[in-house]
Image: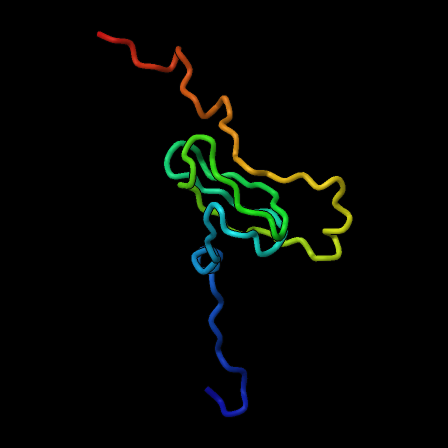
Length: 109
């Protein structure tokens, strides 16, 4: 490398950035309003919810506290005042797609 020339630098991949993201749990205080990715213990694929600062991370109606939250996109503080009315999410609902249908259960032989 030449003296005074450009220095090499490391660019982190998206996967590396995701691995560094802070994970939050049910009943912790939401530190920043925004969109959070929700990961359930086993019954559902990850999905996203919008949560507001100073509320609590909700529990799941099916797996209770076995959920993790990761901030995907923060909302600037100025935008928070424009949210009206303020709706709080206390529990993540179990959706019909989460429950096995009768026609999906294996038949007894």
